[in-house]
Image (cartoon, rainbow, N blue to C red; front, side, top):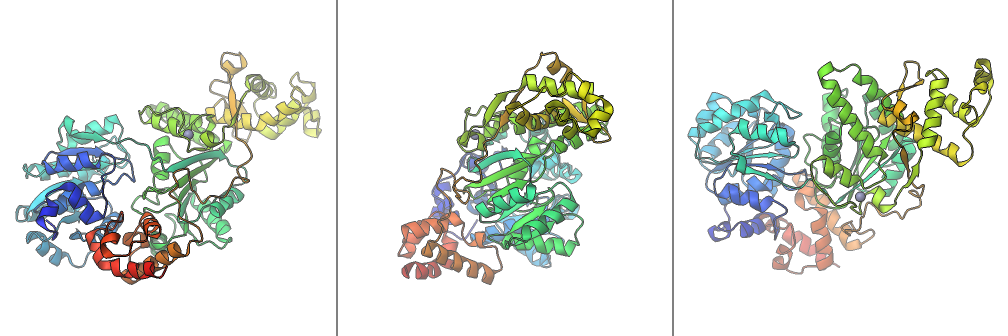
Length: 599
Ligand SMILES: [Zn+2]
């Protein structure tokens, strides 16, 4: 139990305000907290950014004894430790990276810790179990609980040893937490961790502050430079390979913004330094492979860009979910190309037979997402089993409706040209045949004699490229070994007129749109050129540097914005600002009041 007065700790809302400076819970947080306080074991499925850690931190503060948190990554534990400590929570980690393990064990046994973070490997050892019998514990919190399931995407065998450990302490409730688990995985987590069916709480998947935009990749460096110019704040650019990471980091870094690479091929020290610099920064761009971000709890990432097709919708949602955990407006931009689908479909041939159908379904779901003319968010949420409204008002297609064109006849012409030329030529050649350009190669083969020669003209010709892209995405056109295109999937059905084809062509107005630094209609973006806000940020920066923590650990941007708007003149008024808990008020209150008085 924390050092806060007992009367405050009796009520979850009072304790929430005193500890975190929040006046209300978000989403399902309150349900989860109340279940934990009633000693009921629970599995909470909450999207990234929904405030998962608060659901065990608050009960830990309110109760006697320590909450033992099982977490799979040391980096993640240390991030959590830093944020918890800044809020006055008595927390420690017990990992191989900690030199003060003896001291931590003493504090744990003496009941002086609210939170103790350990990795599953340590938790499952016999001497840790023995330690638990000698220490007061109030809760087991199992973070990234999908790791316990083979159905999940990060199975960790050591998670399987948690159940016997926890069974030895039948009076201590369990709280399993995960951001990603389909129905199958959820059932498995419940069974593996010994949590009753009615202990499942699932929050909605929606991340309303993230604006989704998906567009064809025509010139990735220019497209990404535009994105960087439009959006300040930290950002992540995901690239599919190490080579692409290096190449993009160099090209984007030439613009003056701090840009760093991150991939498994870098020297571990360089990688760690780049990650630390990114976590501490307010404006850095990390170009990385998808491994980056897993162990990072940075709430102020303002954009996530994919320079290539993600592996699956689940992967895409998890990666884009690293943006905007603080609830401020953020963007997720995906640049995709027909070649991404070509490569992915080629790889399908290499996967084991029994996995092929599943992989194919995965790819088709991505194709439907990128080709969609309707709301992106609706497609994503439906994928996760929700029934969202038809339009969200905060994705590219809702904000600027694409031109959805009936293209069945043109598709038939393109597919016929592929068939008649022997399924071995690339798009450029096919385009020439269809638009009637008789160059040497075509004359040499006599292709100017084909019935498809010159049958596409005028505006229809402009449809060929996006159509080829769309047909490749859905698999009706597949790549040959030598860079040509062949018929695949439902190509024959399209040619016979059994399937119709529409393509969504996005308006070309994106570069003219008002530069809004990622601000959406929700109005939560930082003010530009406000001297008070800038001064508050400056103070935060120097306090962060002094304490050796990232600026967001001191206060989130939204807290500084509220300060700049309300201009509190006393400690009690400052304490009423969202995000200013008792500990932070005591630590930083005077310094911020000092700056506020100058304006
Ligand atoms: Zn939408």
